Image (cartoon, one colour):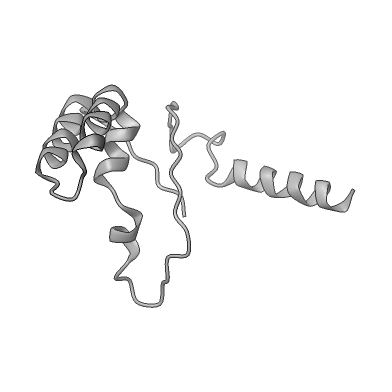
Length: 103
């Protein structure tokens, strides 16, 4: 599963994440300042703080979330471009792994 997100207002995203951090009773005070700093400086961190893969898929029948990882990068996204193919990089990585395994 890949998810492409366009952030249209990075300031609003960061503000929402900071608000959620302020209200999070389970976040230890020692981590709060670090988390606030990361969220304020990095849009991807703000998004990662607000979106939990387990919340997205946790209650979907027939699915058990085995592992979730985050990675992000800024890119020029054009869904109509033939240069943009979802999973293209993943296929290349799998081919590289298969070649290395066969050596």
